Amino acid sequence: MTLLTFDRYRAEIVKQTDLLRAYLGDADPTAPVPSCPGWNLGQLVRHLGGAHGWAEMVVRTRSTEPVPDDPVNEIPRRTGEDLATLSARLGDGAGLLADALRKTGPDRPVWTPGPGGTPMFWARRMTHETAVHRADAALTVGAAFHLDEDVARDALDEWLTYSTLPEAYEGEPALLGPGRTFRLQATDADAAWLVDLTGDAPVLRETGGQAAVEVSGTLTDLLLLLYGRPAPGVEAVGDTALLGLWRRRAAFWLQ
Image (tube, rainbow, N blue to C red; front, side, top):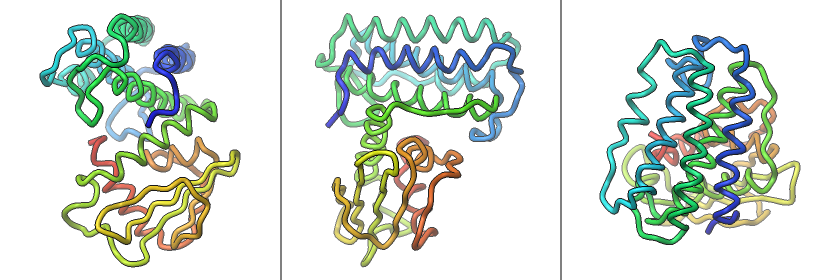
């Protein structure tokens, strides 16, 4: 279930891109990105532009067959372009993606690398891909980062939904087991999620029930935690090693 409309996602892709570009002004393109080891700021911008281009190609061509993700994985390895050029290209690419989504609409069948199979998947995924990489850029240049409540809620919902797929809990090390429950509690909104790992598959509930591991923080910080980004405002009480295992296993779809 998505929490935002298709048009809102389209608008957010452009908005989050513009907010990221505002960090780039006098920034050093060779500055290392602390939350993306091995990448510098220029490579981060290239990667995000490549992700936008990949999604735009799928949506614009209305492909129902897998489209290679070379733009996502190869572009970051290039060097030599100035940050102003990369910034302008990133802005243009976000606009092209938003336009391709508008022209294709939310429901036409297209290939997606995860559950969904429509442009709605790409609209939602690229919204949150852009927002999280904006957090990476903000961290790199020392800027503040915050997401609107409804965007942060939807991003958390997306991540948590993927955490219930078989790829997240099948195999080793074992994730499911007795007493394995997590509660994520937002401190800046009336929002909580209970993740139950005690059965044959994870179960996700929006509830405030007690759990073996209690995690609290703002919606933005909870999202950053799940994505493996620094989230100093989050407090975790309980089996933090299990929390780390769950977060790593459930993030399989980001690898």
